[in-house]
Amino acid sequence: MEDTALPVSTSALPVFDFADRPDYSEFALAAGTGRRQPMQGFGADYVDIVDYIVRCTHKIWEEKAVGLIYTHYAHNTLIHTAGGGSFYGRETVVRNTLQNQAIWGDMRAYADDVIWGGNDQNGFYSSHRVSSMGTHTGHSEYGPPSGRKVHRWGIADCVVRENRIVEEWLASDTLTELRQMGYDPLQLAKRAVLPVTFHTHGELDRLPTGQQSPTFLDVPSANDDPQGFVAAVLQNMWNARLVNMVREHYAPTHVAFVPDSRKLYGHGDYENFVITMMACFPDLMVNIDHQCVLGDERRGFRVATRCTFQGTHEGYGPYGAPTGRRIFLIVISHHTIRGGKITQEWTVFDEFALLKQLYGQIGESHGG
Image (cartoon, rainbow, N blue to C red; front, side):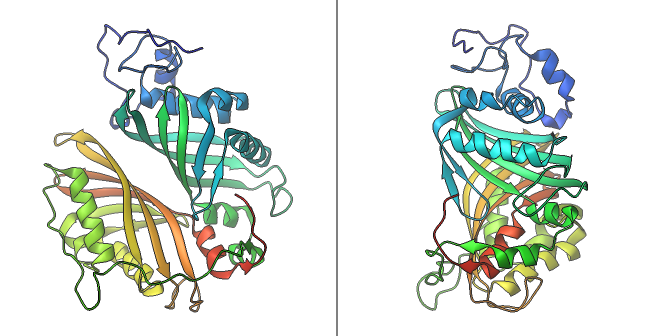
């Protein structure tokens, strides 16, 4: 049921904010109590956009109300997956959801944050960080159930209009999932079949034309422009190779959660993470595709940034000897800023998708 006439609640309650660390029971108790923000066209029980994202995910995945995809996704929704592939239509969302639920019968998807922007007139944009846990009790494309427990991080960015997700970008730590299931991700990657359209492209536009130097951006104050601050730090660090951005703009006690279940502490660990990626992909280029921010100077800011990484595997490192292949990855980061410095970070991209691009067999074109 949808109701476009519900008013904003007269109690003037604030929009749910994960800076307050709400428990799921708080969302359940608030259901149907009136709007906390304008939500034209949304289901009557949703009070704000954070509530919508958290509870529709819970209904579909944990309560197994898979059919609600028909009322929560547009018929022509477009889903972008971590390795650059896309699929179209909510019937595909239904199919993929059922197949995943068959693998993880007890999957629990704990909402860890929702950073959002926009409004009900132009559409909301949400970046939903999830900590997922479950037991491998069903068959998958990789083999029979192992009975092993799995935990991984994932982030889903969505554009939402009138109760329906019209576009979505997914990033998850599939490498961790496969390792915990007992598989060797590299061997699985070598068995993967890539579409015939997969090939090495021309040079990346990381640098200006010819012999010119990269652009060094001025970094604005984190408290005055947290979104611009993160954007400038990322572009200077990754595209202009100014790795000194870490010591200048990250707190000494910075903690970062990155793929393969790695937890990085302080400047040295994080510098090594950045330099290792650049060493493996010397022409690595980062495009910032979208950002949104919540918070204030007193409580701190949370910035969600969706990027695309492209590069050519021409260096040695954790991904093996150079293959000469081009990679394309969706990378989604959540940064916490306090006292003008980045204090925490969650950066999620699919390293298994990366391995498949490096070692998969070039074969027949396939969808998904």
